[in-house]
Length: 255
Image (cartoon, rainbow, N blue to C red; front, side, top):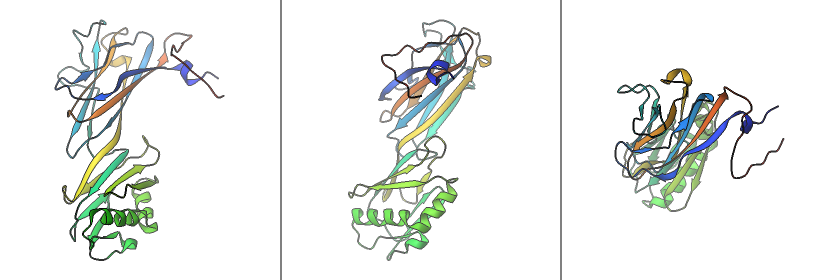
């Protein structure tokens, strides 16, 4: 049986960096598709505030210069995805302020409501202390309550959601099985319950049939706010020729 690294070519398309460049954003170097039938870009972004987006497009060029690189599909890109903050993310934070009675935070459709007294079995958390860190700790306990976890697991397709409390009014929610399940979190008040994306994943796959020529070169282009960070890994597969060799600085296998 051949190893995955013998059947696929894995490359760093964009190393982890801030998206400080305005449109047309950051574009990776070009990768030749002459030996491959398929390519998938795995895009990981972080530090996304409410309503921020990252637009991801696969670009193509017939030569390895980049001078004529353009989105596949031209003015109407066909290999594109938009990552939106707090929607279908992997890790999301909640920064808790002085929450008022009736304020809510909704996690994958499950609503948690602030009240003057806690009722964790019914997704109600305590805000009476007026102290942000204390409110956050009670919200974490409410999310972690057995009844809440049952609802969240059902709403998340069977995935679990863990909650980390930094004891300084910031909660971090993480979905299990990243890439298979996701988190969507909304609050009723962006100031008192501020939601931000800590990590989100997007996958963009193209086949050689979408390219202008079998020996085209492909790249990934990202456009997002100057505070967002991103990294991209490219995997090319379905080799046209054998054998395939993976040339890297170091490797190890356990088989």
